[in-house]
Image 1: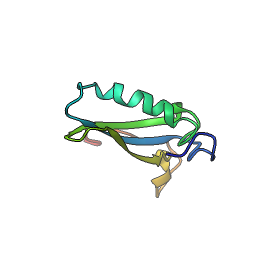
Image 2 (image 1 turned 135 degrees about the horizontal axis):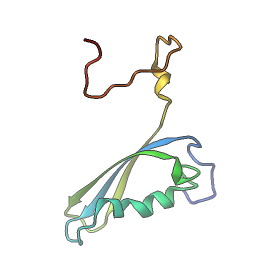
Image 3 (image 1 turned 180 degrees about the horizontal axis):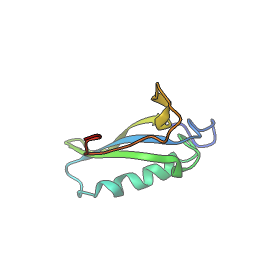
Length: 103
């Protein structure tokens, strides 16, 4: 990984991360949230300016028979939900989850 301070952060806006923690099966099993806390802090100033930019986080723990653990990280910018809107009638959007609109 690039050392801190050698380049500007990857992104300065909202970011979505996917983290896969690959851990040896011989080690004590840790909670997945504890596996990524230190990682998110260490990426601050390298991948993003501040870890408060992380708006979406998906994480998994995967065991393997090796002796050293590592992380696989995928990062993508978060775009405003309206960025994909083709038609905008000027009204507030109706966002409905699990229901039917109409009669």
